[in-house]
View 1 (cartoon, each protein chain N blue to C red):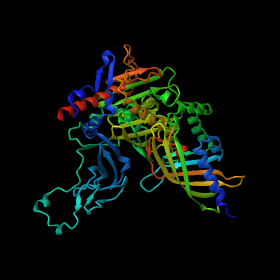
View 2: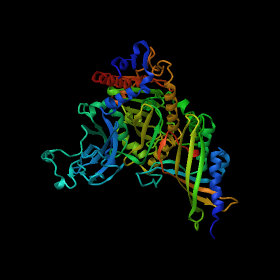
View 3: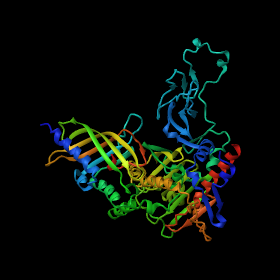
View 4: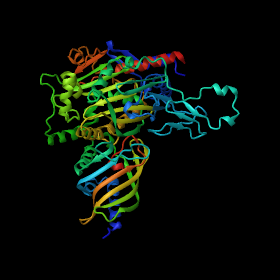
Length: 164
Length: 445
C-alpha cells in the first residue's frame, strides 16, 4: 500500500512552521528518540560526504537528545548566536516520494530558509534539499531521519538547526 | 596615503610600563588592510596544503596566497609545485577546481595547456598565429611561487624570494607541529574529508587573537561549557590524568616571527581525546618519545603560526586558515586534521568532537564568529585604545615552571598562571611582527 503524500507534506510544512515559530518543544517531538539528523559537508564541487564516521559533516546527530542539547544551548540565553535569535522563514517545495514502497517512507523536498538577523539587519538565505525518512505507524508521521543537503555551503558566520 | 607616523602609532609597545596597545583603526582602516595584504599576507610563508592532499603525480588543489590564486600540484618527478593560477595568455584562472587529479590544465578561454610541472605544453594554433619572432623564446610557463617548502608534511609557499628558510621561520614553534604529527604511527597527518568554509564580517585579527585567547572561553562559550558539564555527569570514561603533582593552569610560549602557542594543564582531560582513547598507540608513543612528550600531546594546545594559520589539538583537532577579504570581512577554511593510521574509533571520536566544536554549525566556533562581529562593530567607536593585551604583564609573572624544558624549547615569552589565568602576553609577538612589517612597508611607500 502506498503512503499518503498529503499527510507527509503537511508534516514537513508543520516542522518548518514550528522552527520559524521557535516552538522547539513541539518541533523536537516530531523526531523519534533515535532519529538521525544529518547535514553532510561537501567533499568537492560535486560530491557529498557519505560516511559520517570517516568524513566531516556540518551536523551529525544520531538521537533526539543531541538536538535537545542544541535547543538548551540557545534557550539558556548564554549562546551569543542566539542573542538575539535570527528570524527565519522556511519555504518548502517539491515534496515527493523518492521511495514510497519502503517503510519508513523516503521523501524529498526542496527548501529555502530566509534568515534575517536583527543584530546586524543582515539577511541571507540557505537553500538545498531535504531527504526525510518518515515513520507512518503512529497517528501522525514522525521523523526517523532528516538529511539536509545545503547547496550554498560557504556559511555566513553561523548556521544551526533553526536556519536549515 | 598612510604616513609612517600613522603606522608608528598603530602599536604602543611598552610592557615595562604596563602598556601594550593596538589602535582600533588597525581593525577598520582600508589603507592598513591594503598594506597587510601586500606586505604581510603576500610577503611571508603561507600554509597552502598537506602533502597527503596531493599524494600521487598530477594530483592538485587550488588555494590563495593573500589575494592571489595559486595552483598546488604533485609534479611528474614526485616533488610539489606551486604556481600562480593564471593563464600566461590572457590571465584566466587556469584551474577552476578545488582539488582533483589531471595531467594537463587547459585554459578554457583559448586552450593554452599546462602540465603538472607548470610547463606550457600547447599554444592553440601556434603555427597559424603569425606570432612575432620574439614569442618563440618567450617563457610561457605558469609562474611558480618564489619559495616552496614543506615541514612534516605541511606545505608552505611564499611569493617573496627573501623569506628565511621555512624551518628557520617556524623556529621552535615547529615543536608544536611535531606534537601533532608524531601522534601518527607513520609520522603523517591528513585532512579528514569534508572541509568547511565560512565568513565573518570582521577583521582577520579577531580570529588571530581568538586562537591565542583562553580568557574568553568561559564567558563566550558558557552555553557550551554547560553542555560539557551535563555530558560529564553521564560519562564514566577512564581517561588518562596528569600526574597528581602537576600544577594545573594555563600558559603560553611565544617565538620569533610572531608565532605563539597557548596550552592548559588539567588534572582530567575535559573530555575523551582521540589519542587517549587508543591505548596501543599511547604505549607506542611513550616508548618512542618518552612520558614528557606524550604528556604534551595530551594537553590542550593552540598554535598560531603568523599570519594566517592555527592548529588546535584539544578534544578534537583543527587546522584553520584565514583569507582577509576586506577590513571587515574574512573567509575561513577549516579542516579536521588527523594522524594517519589512527584507529577507526579514535577517528570517529575526532570527527564528532570536531563537528561539535569547530564547525560554523557547531556549538562553540559559531559563538566566536558572532563575537568577532560584535568587536568589529564596537571598534568603530572612537573610545581610545583597548585594555585587551595586559593579562600577564603584572610585576610578578610566573615563568619558572618545567614546561619549556619538557618540550625542549627556549621561547621568547613564557607565561604560566592559574587555570583561569587567560594570559595575553602571547598576543604580543604577533602584533610586534605585524607592526614591524607595516613599518617596513611604510618606508617603501
